[in-house]
Image (cartoon, rainbow, N blue to C red; front, top):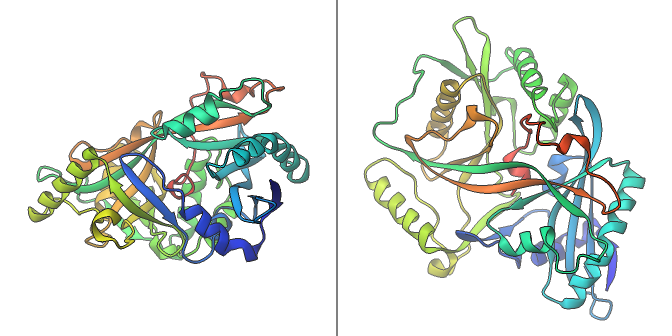
Length: 377
């Protein structure tokens, strides 16, 4: 096996390799990046690197992993952080063993060349095989990075509203952002972002840079909530990743199938929006239709739910909403009067076996973490 740094011309081969690995859970999903495999990383940061593990005889890709490097606000100071993304290894035993030999050298190389101080990875808590492979490797003597849980959170999806679901603040002013409200929006986002660890928008310049890099996201996409004194008290930017990254349902578990049937019944009553039929039924790869709730901040629970109502009303009739809720962030708990679902995830710090875990991993540090839902799945 040979490890190479992937180049732009490898995007088609990487895209097909990545698409061949459906993620398991209540819904078996195939991930497709129809345009450019690397476009997803370019939205997150200007610095990223993808490693491709190739069979030396056939030159076919047997494994791939990406690292996105960016400066974040960690413990009240700017720190270079590397996020491990999209690790996929074929069932070839040689590929599995070879990747185990390359994992630490890759981390050391990124640490030296890009000055990365901390490594993170997000794991789906429903993918048991991945959890066992990373958290509980069979051979403890192998030189592999150790995974330390930093935060648990949920990916929440909102599919409809029950008849008794009402907007808690019907008179709250929710408008689209404009150049007139730009300065106030920047100040609000920077203020709220500094309250979280791993913040990426702790200054006005960082916020403007992030919005400019985000493909398909304009200032007018932001929904801004204002009080009676024209002060911003919440904001959200609903955004679709269609054309950049799409999720194709291959099959539904019995539990997910029953939920999909309930959504079909609820749509007939005007409550819900349905899920895409699986490939096993259609024999056509049709993606799920949803919008990520990005840059989601609110001063309290009622403002948060009012923003949900505004985003849901503006979404298309076949789209549901998706956002992240940290377990320590009670403001963003999913409302009980909505038709919703949630999936558990964990944010892990990757630490070389010869080092002690950093101080910020201590359980007494319960500060919420800033993560955008698009960068998690």
